[in-house]
Length: 459
Image (cartoon, one colour):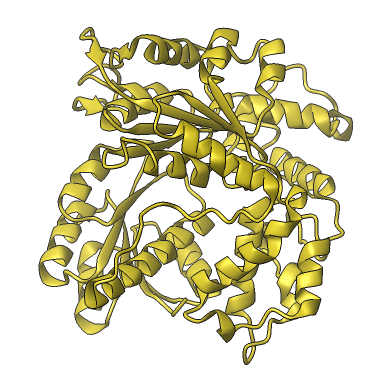
Protein backbone atom coordinates (compact mmCIF):
# COMPACT_ATOMS: atom_id res chain seq x y z
CA UNK A 1 0.00 0.00 0.00
CA UNK A 2 1.61 3.28 -1.09
CA UNK A 3 1.61 6.32 1.17
CA UNK A 4 -1.60 8.34 0.94
CA UNK A 5 -1.85 12.08 1.40
CA UNK A 6 -4.87 12.72 3.60
CA UNK A 7 -6.49 15.94 4.85
CA UNK A 8 -8.62 15.77 7.99
CA UNK A 9 -11.04 18.70 8.28
CA UNK A 10 -12.72 19.33 11.64
CA UNK A 11 -13.15 22.29 13.98
CA UNK A 12 -12.34 20.06 16.97
CA UNK A 13 -8.57 20.21 17.60
CA UNK A 14 -8.57 17.06 19.73
CA UNK A 15 -10.08 15.07 16.85
CA UNK A 16 -7.53 16.59 14.46
CA UNK A 17 -4.62 15.59 16.70
CA UNK A 18 -5.95 12.06 17.20
CA UNK A 19 -6.61 11.54 13.49
CA UNK A 20 -3.28 13.02 12.49
CA UNK A 21 -1.32 10.86 14.91
CA UNK A 22 -3.12 7.71 13.81
CA UNK A 23 -2.73 8.47 10.08
CA UNK A 24 1.03 8.89 10.58
CA UNK A 25 1.21 5.64 12.57
CA UNK A 26 -0.37 3.90 9.59
CA UNK A 27 2.47 5.20 7.41
CA UNK A 28 0.54 7.91 5.54
CA UNK A 29 0.98 11.67 5.16
CA UNK A 30 -1.33 13.69 7.36
CA UNK A 31 -2.60 17.25 6.92
CA UNK A 32 -5.13 18.99 9.16
CA UNK A 33 -7.53 21.86 8.61
CA UNK A 34 -9.92 23.47 11.09
CA UNK A 35 -12.32 24.63 8.37
CA UNK A 36 -13.08 24.35 4.68
CA UNK A 37 -11.04 27.37 3.67
CA UNK A 38 -7.86 25.95 5.21
CA UNK A 39 -8.52 22.66 3.43
CA UNK A 40 -8.84 24.42 0.07
CA UNK A 41 -5.53 26.24 0.69
CA UNK A 42 -3.85 22.88 1.27
CA UNK A 43 -5.44 21.42 -1.87
CA UNK A 44 -4.11 24.30 -3.95
CA UNK A 45 -0.57 23.67 -2.72
CA UNK A 46 -0.32 19.87 -2.44
CA UNK A 47 -1.39 16.70 -4.19
CA UNK A 48 -4.08 15.19 -1.96
CA UNK A 49 -5.57 11.71 -2.30
CA UNK A 50 -8.42 11.86 0.21
CA UNK A 51 -10.23 14.52 2.23
CA UNK A 52 -12.03 13.42 5.39
CA UNK A 53 -14.41 16.18 6.42
CA UNK A 54 -16.88 16.83 9.22
CA UNK A 55 -20.20 18.11 7.86
CA UNK A 56 -21.01 20.68 10.55
CA UNK A 57 -18.39 23.43 10.68
CA UNK A 58 -18.30 27.23 10.93
CA UNK A 59 -17.33 29.48 7.99
CA UNK A 60 -17.64 26.74 5.37
CA UNK A 61 -19.51 23.52 6.09
CA UNK A 62 -18.63 20.10 4.73
CA UNK A 63 -21.24 20.19 1.95
CA UNK A 64 -19.90 23.44 0.49
CA UNK A 65 -16.34 22.13 0.76
CA UNK A 66 -17.36 18.94 -1.04
CA UNK A 67 -18.87 20.88 -3.97
CA UNK A 68 -15.75 23.03 -4.37
CA UNK A 69 -13.43 20.01 -4.25
CA UNK A 70 -15.41 18.03 -6.83
CA UNK A 71 -15.47 21.10 -9.08
CA UNK A 72 -11.80 22.11 -8.75
CA UNK A 73 -10.10 18.82 -7.78
CA UNK A 74 -12.23 16.03 -9.29
CA UNK A 75 -9.56 13.36 -8.75
CA UNK A 76 -9.52 13.94 -4.99
CA UNK A 77 -11.87 11.68 -3.05
CA UNK A 78 -14.04 13.08 -0.29
CA UNK A 79 -15.38 11.04 2.62
CA UNK A 80 -17.86 12.88 4.83
CA UNK A 81 -18.29 12.35 8.56
CA UNK A 82 -21.73 12.95 10.01
CA UNK A 83 -22.88 12.60 13.59
CA UNK A 84 -25.69 11.33 15.72
CA UNK A 85 -26.49 8.34 13.51
CA UNK A 86 -28.17 10.52 10.85
CA UNK A 87 -27.65 9.70 7.20
CA UNK A 88 -29.62 12.63 5.71
CA UNK A 89 -26.51 14.73 5.12
CA UNK A 90 -24.57 11.68 4.00
CA UNK A 91 -27.11 10.74 1.32
CA UNK A 92 -27.14 14.32 0.05
CA UNK A 93 -23.35 14.38 0.02
CA UNK A 94 -23.23 11.18 -2.04
CA UNK A 95 -25.40 12.88 -4.66
CA UNK A 96 -22.82 15.67 -4.91
CA UNK A 97 -19.98 13.24 -5.48
CA UNK A 98 -18.78 12.11 -2.05
CA UNK A 99 -16.94 8.79 -2.22
CA UNK A 100 -18.36 7.44 1.03
CA UNK A 101 -19.66 8.49 4.42
CA UNK A 102 -18.88 7.55 8.01
CA UNK A 103 -21.38 7.69 10.86
CA UNK A 104 -20.38 8.62 14.40
CA UNK A 105 -19.40 6.93 16.61
CA UNK A 106 -16.55 5.22 14.77
CA UNK A 107 -13.08 3.85 15.43
CA UNK A 108 -10.03 5.50 13.88
CA UNK A 109 -8.78 2.11 12.69
CA UNK A 110 -11.99 1.47 10.75
CA UNK A 111 -11.84 4.91 9.12
CA UNK A 112 -8.27 4.51 7.88
CA UNK A 113 -8.94 0.95 6.68
CA UNK A 114 -11.91 2.26 4.71
CA UNK A 115 -9.75 4.97 3.14
CA UNK A 116 -7.00 2.48 2.25
CA UNK A 117 -9.47 -0.04 0.85
CA UNK A 118 -11.15 2.57 -1.32
CA UNK A 119 -7.84 3.85 -2.69
CA UNK A 120 -6.72 0.30 -3.40
CA UNK A 121 -9.99 -0.45 -5.22
CA UNK A 122 -9.73 2.81 -7.13
CA UNK A 123 -6.29 1.87 -8.48
CA UNK A 124 -7.53 -1.55 -9.55
CA UNK A 125 -10.46 0.05 -11.38
CA UNK A 126 -8.06 2.46 -13.13
CA UNK A 127 -5.93 -0.47 -14.29
CA UNK A 128 -9.03 -2.21 -15.60
CA UNK A 129 -10.01 0.90 -17.58
CA UNK A 130 -6.50 1.20 -19.05
CA UNK A 131 -6.02 -2.42 -20.04
CA UNK A 132 -9.62 -3.34 -20.70
CA UNK A 133 -9.64 -6.13 -18.13
CA UNK A 134 -12.87 -7.19 -16.51
CA UNK A 135 -12.98 -7.68 -12.77
CA UNK A 136 -15.72 -9.48 -10.89
CA UNK A 137 -17.41 -7.55 -8.07
CA UNK A 138 -17.94 -10.83 -6.23
CA UNK A 139 -16.07 -10.83 -2.88
CA UNK A 140 -13.26 -13.36 -2.73
CA UNK A 141 -13.43 -16.00 -0.02
CA UNK A 142 -10.33 -18.09 0.68
CA UNK A 143 -11.47 -21.68 1.18
CA UNK A 144 -8.91 -24.47 1.45
CA UNK A 145 -10.63 -26.34 4.28
CA UNK A 146 -13.58 -28.65 3.72
CA UNK A 147 -15.66 -26.59 6.18
CA UNK A 148 -15.31 -23.42 4.12
CA UNK A 149 -15.80 -25.25 0.83
CA UNK A 150 -19.06 -26.65 2.18
CA UNK A 151 -20.13 -23.14 3.15
CA UNK A 152 -19.43 -21.86 -0.38
CA UNK A 153 -21.47 -24.73 -1.83
CA UNK A 154 -24.32 -23.80 0.50
CA UNK A 155 -24.09 -20.14 -0.53
CA UNK A 156 -24.38 -21.13 -4.21
CA UNK A 157 -27.62 -22.95 -3.37
CA UNK A 158 -29.13 -20.29 -1.09
CA UNK A 159 -28.04 -17.07 -2.85
CA UNK A 160 -30.49 -17.23 -5.83
CA UNK A 161 -33.45 -17.60 -3.43
CA UNK A 162 -35.13 -14.91 -1.34
CA UNK A 163 -34.66 -16.84 1.90
CA UNK A 164 -33.64 -14.94 5.02
CA UNK A 165 -30.14 -15.98 6.08
CA UNK A 166 -28.61 -15.89 9.57
CA UNK A 167 -24.80 -15.87 9.64
CA UNK A 168 -23.21 -16.89 12.94
CA UNK A 169 -19.64 -17.02 14.18
CA UNK A 170 -17.07 -15.30 16.35
CA UNK A 171 -16.10 -11.66 15.87
CA UNK A 172 -13.73 -11.22 12.94
CA UNK A 173 -14.45 -14.46 11.05
CA UNK A 174 -15.77 -12.63 7.99
CA UNK A 175 -19.55 -12.57 8.37
CA UNK A 176 -19.70 -9.29 6.44
CA UNK A 177 -17.84 -10.87 3.51
CA UNK A 178 -20.24 -13.82 3.43
CA UNK A 179 -23.22 -11.45 3.46
CA UNK A 180 -21.80 -9.53 0.48
CA UNK A 181 -21.08 -12.79 -1.30
CA UNK A 182 -24.71 -13.88 -0.85
CA UNK A 183 -25.89 -10.59 -2.34
CA UNK A 184 -23.42 -10.67 -5.25
CA UNK A 185 -24.59 -14.17 -6.24
CA UNK A 186 -28.30 -13.33 -5.95
CA UNK A 187 -30.76 -11.96 -8.49
CA UNK A 188 -30.59 -8.70 -6.51
CA UNK A 189 -26.88 -8.13 -7.17
CA UNK A 190 -27.49 -5.01 -9.29
CA UNK A 191 -29.68 -3.51 -6.55
CA UNK A 192 -28.58 -1.87 -3.27
CA UNK A 193 -26.70 -3.73 -0.55
CA UNK A 194 -27.28 -1.74 2.65
CA UNK A 195 -25.44 -2.55 5.88
CA UNK A 196 -26.51 -1.61 9.39
CA UNK A 197 -24.48 -2.43 12.50
CA UNK A 198 -26.94 -2.80 15.37
CA UNK A 199 -24.22 -2.37 18.02
CA UNK A 200 -23.08 1.02 16.73
CA UNK A 201 -26.53 2.60 17.17
CA UNK A 202 -28.08 3.35 20.56
CA UNK A 203 -31.71 2.64 21.36
CA UNK A 204 -32.71 6.23 20.68
CA UNK A 205 -31.78 6.20 16.99
CA UNK A 206 -31.91 2.57 15.87
CA UNK A 207 -35.57 2.68 14.79
CA UNK A 208 -35.06 5.96 12.96
CA UNK A 209 -32.10 4.43 11.10
CA UNK A 210 -33.96 1.23 10.28
CA UNK A 211 -37.48 2.49 9.51
CA UNK A 212 -36.85 6.19 8.85
CA UNK A 213 -38.86 9.02 10.41
CA UNK A 214 -41.31 11.75 9.52
CA UNK A 215 -40.57 15.45 9.90
CA UNK A 216 -41.33 16.65 13.41
CA UNK A 217 -41.68 13.14 14.85
CA UNK A 218 -39.11 13.99 17.55
CA UNK A 219 -36.72 16.77 18.53
CA UNK A 220 -34.17 17.16 15.77
CA UNK A 221 -36.32 15.55 13.06
CA UNK A 222 -36.22 18.61 10.80
CA UNK A 223 -37.12 16.65 7.68
CA UNK A 224 -38.53 13.32 6.58
CA UNK A 225 -35.87 10.64 6.30
CA UNK A 226 -35.84 7.25 4.62
CA UNK A 227 -34.46 4.42 6.73
CA UNK A 228 -32.17 1.57 5.74
CA UNK A 229 -35.14 -0.63 4.81
CA UNK A 230 -36.35 1.82 2.17
CA UNK A 231 -32.84 2.42 0.89
CA UNK A 232 -32.46 -1.35 0.44
CA UNK A 233 -35.75 -1.78 -1.47
CA UNK A 234 -35.42 -4.50 -4.14
CA UNK A 235 -31.96 -5.26 -2.77
CA UNK A 236 -30.48 -6.74 0.40
CA UNK A 237 -30.31 -5.41 3.97
CA UNK A 238 -27.47 -6.75 6.10
CA UNK A 239 -28.20 -6.45 9.83
CA UNK A 240 -24.88 -7.01 11.57
CA UNK A 241 -24.93 -7.97 15.29
CA UNK A 242 -28.68 -8.42 15.23
CA UNK A 243 -28.56 -9.97 18.70
CA UNK A 244 -28.13 -6.47 20.13
CA UNK A 245 -31.31 -4.81 18.87
CA UNK A 246 -33.78 -3.81 21.63
CA UNK A 247 -37.02 -5.82 22.18
CA UNK A 248 -39.30 -3.07 20.85
CA UNK A 249 -37.41 -3.01 17.56
CA UNK A 250 -37.38 -6.81 17.40
CA UNK A 251 -41.17 -6.84 17.31
CA UNK A 252 -41.34 -4.32 14.45
CA UNK A 253 -38.63 -6.17 12.51
CA UNK A 254 -40.62 -9.39 12.80
CA UNK A 255 -43.53 -7.66 11.06
CA UNK A 256 -41.21 -6.57 8.24
CA UNK A 257 -39.98 -10.13 7.73
CA UNK A 258 -43.48 -11.58 7.76
CA UNK A 259 -45.50 -8.90 5.96
CA UNK A 260 -42.87 -6.78 4.13
CA UNK A 261 -44.37 -3.57 5.51
CA UNK A 262 -43.78 -0.93 8.21
CA UNK A 263 -44.36 2.71 9.13
CA UNK A 264 -41.72 5.35 9.62
CA UNK A 265 -41.21 6.68 13.14
CA UNK A 266 -43.98 9.22 13.73
CA UNK A 267 -45.75 8.24 10.51
CA UNK A 268 -49.09 6.60 9.69
CA UNK A 269 -48.53 5.62 6.06
CA UNK A 270 -47.80 1.91 5.63
CA UNK A 271 -44.78 1.39 3.38
CA UNK A 272 -44.42 -1.86 1.45
CA UNK A 273 -40.96 -3.06 0.43
CA UNK A 274 -39.23 -6.00 -1.24
CA UNK A 275 -36.04 -6.58 0.75
CA UNK A 276 -33.99 -9.66 1.45
CA UNK A 277 -32.70 -9.63 5.02
CA UNK A 278 -29.32 -11.13 5.86
CA UNK A 279 -28.49 -11.05 9.56
CA UNK A 280 -25.34 -11.85 11.51
CA UNK A 281 -24.45 -12.31 15.16
CA UNK A 282 -21.61 -13.52 17.36
CA UNK A 283 -24.11 -14.34 20.10
CA UNK A 284 -25.77 -17.66 20.90
CA UNK A 285 -29.30 -16.65 19.93
CA UNK A 286 -31.00 -19.80 21.32
CA UNK A 287 -29.42 -18.94 24.67
CA UNK A 288 -30.58 -15.32 24.31
CA UNK A 289 -34.10 -16.62 23.59
CA UNK A 290 -33.95 -18.79 26.70
CA UNK A 291 -32.91 -15.76 28.77
CA UNK A 292 -35.80 -13.80 27.17
CA UNK A 293 -33.44 -11.23 25.68
CA UNK A 294 -34.34 -12.15 22.11
CA UNK A 295 -37.79 -12.92 20.73
CA UNK A 296 -38.35 -16.57 19.96
CA UNK A 297 -40.62 -15.85 16.99
CA UNK A 298 -38.05 -13.50 15.46
CA UNK A 299 -35.30 -16.08 15.95
CA UNK A 300 -37.31 -18.74 14.10
CA UNK A 301 -38.08 -16.26 11.31
CA UNK A 302 -34.39 -15.36 10.94
CA UNK A 303 -33.34 -18.98 11.21
CA UNK A 304 -34.67 -20.01 7.79
CA UNK A 305 -31.11 -20.73 6.68
CA UNK A 306 -28.16 -20.57 9.11
CA UNK A 307 -24.56 -20.38 7.97
CA UNK A 308 -22.01 -20.82 10.74
CA UNK A 309 -18.50 -19.54 9.98
CA UNK A 310 -15.81 -21.48 11.88
CA UNK A 311 -13.11 -19.60 13.78
CA UNK A 312 -9.68 -19.29 12.17
CA UNK A 313 -8.13 -21.74 14.65
CA UNK A 314 -10.68 -24.31 13.38
CA UNK A 315 -9.60 -23.78 9.76
CA UNK A 316 -5.81 -23.79 10.04
CA UNK A 317 -5.34 -24.79 6.40
CA UNK A 318 -6.79 -21.41 5.44
CA UNK A 319 -4.31 -19.36 7.50
CA UNK A 320 -1.37 -19.30 5.08
CA UNK A 321 -3.50 -18.83 1.92
CA UNK A 322 -5.29 -15.96 3.68
CA UNK A 323 -1.95 -14.46 4.70
CA UNK A 324 -0.72 -14.63 1.09
CA UNK A 325 -3.96 -13.01 -0.08
CA UNK A 326 -3.54 -10.11 2.35
CA UNK A 327 0.11 -9.74 1.32
CA UNK A 328 -1.12 -9.29 -2.24
CA UNK A 329 -3.66 -6.75 -1.01
CA UNK A 330 -1.13 -4.63 0.86
CA UNK A 331 1.74 -4.87 -1.64
CA UNK A 332 1.88 -4.44 -5.38
CA UNK A 333 3.82 -7.67 -5.67
CA UNK A 334 3.43 -10.60 -3.29
CA UNK A 335 7.20 -11.19 -3.44
CA UNK A 336 7.91 -7.69 -2.11
CA UNK A 337 7.59 -9.05 1.44
CA UNK A 338 8.80 -12.59 2.05
CA UNK A 339 6.93 -15.06 4.23
CA UNK A 340 9.54 -17.41 5.65
CA UNK A 341 8.96 -20.87 7.04
CA UNK A 342 9.53 -19.48 10.55
CA UNK A 343 6.76 -16.92 10.08
CA UNK A 344 4.41 -19.53 8.64
CA UNK A 345 5.00 -21.72 11.69
CA UNK A 346 4.30 -18.74 13.95
CA UNK A 347 1.04 -18.09 12.14
CA UNK A 348 0.00 -21.73 12.39
CA UNK A 349 0.81 -21.98 16.10
CA UNK A 350 -0.96 -18.75 17.08
CA UNK A 351 -4.62 -19.03 18.23
CA UNK A 352 -5.88 -15.91 16.37
CA UNK A 353 -8.51 -14.76 18.89
CA UNK A 354 -9.40 -11.92 16.50
CA UNK A 355 -9.77 -14.40 13.62
CA UNK A 356 -9.42 -13.24 10.00
CA UNK A 357 -9.65 -9.57 10.97
CA UNK A 358 -6.65 -9.94 13.28
CA UNK A 359 -4.69 -11.83 10.61
CA UNK A 360 -5.37 -9.06 8.10
CA UNK A 361 -4.19 -6.37 10.53
CA UNK A 362 -1.10 -8.44 11.39
CA UNK A 363 -0.15 -8.77 7.71
CA UNK A 364 -0.70 -5.07 7.13
CA UNK A 365 1.54 -4.25 10.10
CA UNK A 366 4.14 -6.70 8.77
CA UNK A 367 4.17 -4.91 5.40
CA UNK A 368 4.40 -1.45 6.99
CA UNK A 369 7.37 -2.38 9.19
CA UNK A 370 9.11 -4.74 6.78
CA UNK A 371 12.79 -4.10 6.16
CA UNK A 372 14.25 -4.90 2.73
CA UNK A 373 11.51 -7.43 2.11
CA UNK A 374 11.92 -9.13 5.51
CA UNK A 375 9.20 -9.11 8.14
CA UNK A 376 10.29 -7.60 11.47
CA UNK A 377 9.51 -10.45 13.86
CA UNK A 378 9.66 -8.22 16.93
CA UNK A 379 6.83 -6.07 15.57
CA UNK A 380 4.75 -8.90 14.16
CA UNK A 381 2.72 -9.64 17.28
CA UNK A 382 3.99 -7.19 19.88
CA UNK A 383 3.34 -3.85 18.16
CA UNK A 384 1.78 -1.71 20.86
CA UNK A 385 -1.63 -0.15 20.42
CA UNK A 386 -0.79 3.54 20.67
CA UNK A 387 -4.16 4.75 21.88
CA UNK A 388 -4.63 1.95 24.40
CA UNK A 389 -1.16 2.65 25.74
CA UNK A 390 -1.82 6.37 26.00
CA UNK A 391 -5.02 5.64 27.92
CA UNK A 392 -3.10 3.32 30.21
CA UNK A 393 -5.43 0.45 29.44
CA UNK A 394 -3.23 -2.45 28.38
CA UNK A 395 -0.43 -3.51 26.06
CA UNK A 396 -0.25 -6.82 24.21
CA UNK A 397 3.32 -8.01 24.63
CA UNK A 398 3.04 -11.54 23.27
CA UNK A 399 0.53 -13.97 21.78
CA UNK A 400 0.53 -16.10 24.92
CA UNK A 401 -1.27 -13.39 26.91
CA UNK A 402 -4.74 -14.59 27.83
CA UNK A 403 -7.40 -12.68 25.93
CA UNK A 404 -9.84 -12.97 28.85
CA UNK A 405 -7.32 -11.16 31.06
CA UNK A 406 -6.96 -8.41 28.48
CA UNK A 407 -10.72 -8.03 28.19
CA UNK A 408 -11.15 -7.95 31.96
CA UNK A 409 -8.47 -5.26 32.34
CA UNK A 410 -10.00 -3.15 29.59
CA UNK A 411 -13.53 -3.43 31.00
CA UNK A 412 -12.42 -2.57 34.51
CA UNK A 413 -10.38 0.43 33.32
CA UNK A 414 -13.28 1.88 31.29
CA UNK A 415 -15.82 1.26 34.08
CA UNK A 416 -13.64 2.88 36.72
CA UNK A 417 -12.81 5.87 34.51
CA UNK A 418 -16.54 6.47 33.97
CA UNK A 419 -17.32 5.88 37.67
CA UNK A 420 -19.28 2.79 36.65
CA UNK A 421 -21.59 4.69 34.34
CA UNK A 422 -22.91 1.76 32.29
CA UNK A 423 -24.32 3.73 29.37
CA UNK A 424 -21.15 5.78 28.97
CA UNK A 425 -18.93 2.70 29.29
CA UNK A 426 -20.96 0.77 26.72
CA UNK A 427 -20.68 3.69 24.31
CA UNK A 428 -16.89 3.85 24.74
CA UNK A 429 -16.56 0.07 24.27
CA UNK A 430 -19.05 0.10 21.36
CA UNK A 431 -21.16 -2.70 22.80
CA UNK A 432 -24.74 -2.78 24.07
CA UNK A 433 -25.52 -2.35 27.74
CA UNK A 434 -26.85 -5.90 27.85
CA UNK A 435 -23.55 -7.23 26.52
CA UNK A 436 -21.65 -5.11 29.07
CA UNK A 437 -23.75 -6.48 31.93
CA UNK A 438 -23.01 -10.03 30.71
CA UNK A 439 -19.26 -9.32 30.60
CA UNK A 440 -19.32 -7.76 34.08
CA UNK A 441 -20.88 -10.97 35.42
CA UNK A 442 -18.56 -13.18 33.35
CA UNK A 443 -15.44 -11.59 34.83
CA UNK A 444 -16.99 -11.08 38.28
CA UNK A 445 -16.05 -7.43 38.18
CA UNK A 446 -18.31 -6.65 41.13
CA UNK A 447 -15.63 -8.18 43.35
CA UNK A 448 -13.30 -5.34 42.35
CA UNK A 449 -15.54 -2.80 44.04
CA UNK A 450 -18.59 -2.64 46.23
CA UNK A 451 -21.50 -3.81 44.13
CA UNK A 452 -23.66 -0.74 43.45
CA UNK A 453 -27.30 -0.81 44.42
CA UNK A 454 -28.13 0.90 41.16
CA UNK A 455 -25.91 1.58 38.18
CA UNK A 456 -25.70 5.05 36.70
CA UNK A 457 -27.54 5.05 33.40
CA UNK A 458 -27.16 8.67 32.29
CA UNK A 459 -24.50 9.46 29.66
